[in-house]
Image (cartoon, rainbow, N blue to C red; front, side, top):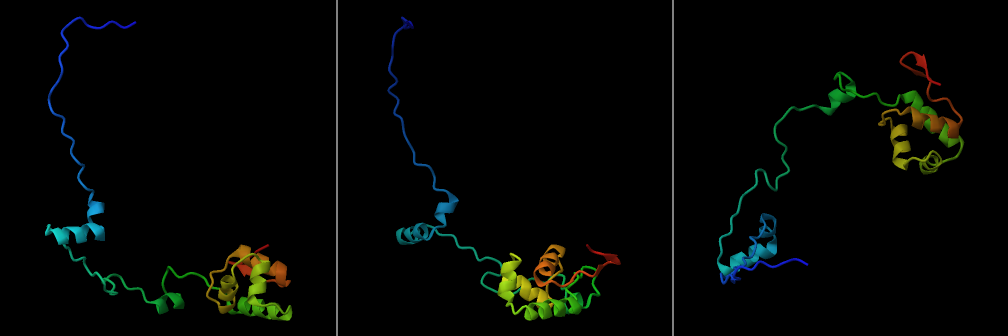
Length: 149
């Protein structure tokens, strides 16, 4: 068993004071806390944010969409060519399918098929392969001089 010290035992009669923790800055921004401070006459700090509530863009490098579409910019992405667009649409109509039905069969969203037929999509070889399988037409003819299998 542990032994006790034989010295005199004294009690500490100092008062212990417990303080509330200060509210976090995040809690002070809540509408309930702001309204309470306003009612009690407390100090409320307001800061106007820069360009708050405006839809204006800051002046920066401007890239015109037309330049990107024309392909004069080095960052231009390839789009679906017109012959591929027409081949997809013709084969789909020959099979009497809607865009939604084709999308369901290739496990893609209907929006993907719509973008391919409108020429807005960036060609993806996997999606084109799925369309070839379902429609029974060859869509991937050549890519950079090499025949894609």
